[in-house]
Length: 405
Image (cartoon, rainbow, N blue to C red; front, side, top):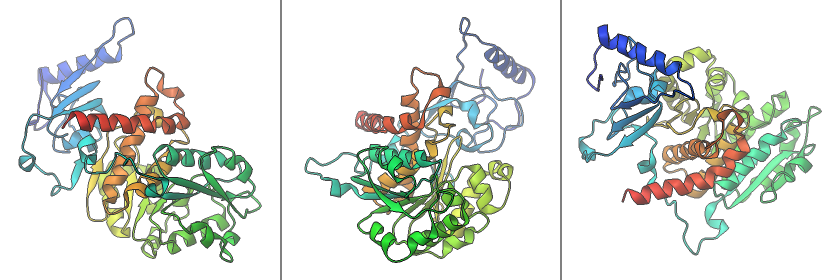
């Protein structure tokens, strides 16, 4: 029984009843009596054109589709009915594949990253892979700085420096021996003080850096938010803005237009996206693709809208959707790791193909979560474990690319 790509309208009658019966049996499965629902092409009842399902949808554990994912498998409110998604090549000529959105909507699968120089040259040295500067941490949130630094190191940045308030510097500096640290002046609440920009001390910290990541664990002190807005406006470096860095621009996203950097990537979860735009999280979730694309064009910035099937949107309308990852990522600190991952990849590969590089970061982050949680319960996955699994994720990506040649 199946309803494939050509479905129009809701499943009805006996087919609808069968879908509901299968879903009910699956929901009541036990370890002693397990069920596995495999969908071929697409789960029965799920339209393929991006429209929301009007009737019952088969809740698959795994879906095997062909040539490319269907839009609804990536972006509809019923996309979680797909379960784990496998895309199988069947020899379809690439130029004959229907291109949705004028060819700018893409699935962030391994083939998209084949053109990036993922293999290091034998004669490579640390200077070839960039120097990441992360501005992160505050009193009570020093772990965010450590995790972002760990993510950057594990993803291959040649050098990593963390600039953090002086009050937490000893803890941050001791969090990972492989990165360097710089001290910033603190407010009375243990966050970065605006006075850190006085004189040329911060300019000295910026010297020689390739990419800036700013935001994890910085807090929402008024002085700190002023510091963040000033740095984002004045830095010429490609910049990743996350967490409290985003909160500094809540309701004031138009400030992003006034900046020196030609490349800015914002990495909000739906709540942060709602605060940036001054609208509810529910409104964001109702049409994630449109929200990400509109904001990217409006502010000439790249967006990584995190969530189930994270979206990477660029100002020119290019979109990547990643299906990598699992519910283990629903834990504090995983976003900090992603900031480090994205900054490290931009340091290595540059920002000329920025949307693809960001998509690689989202893909590796999700795949690392899958690998780190293998054989364990997802509820216990830690952000640091995700960071430590990134090298394995990168190796698995390389193995998949080699096997497809």
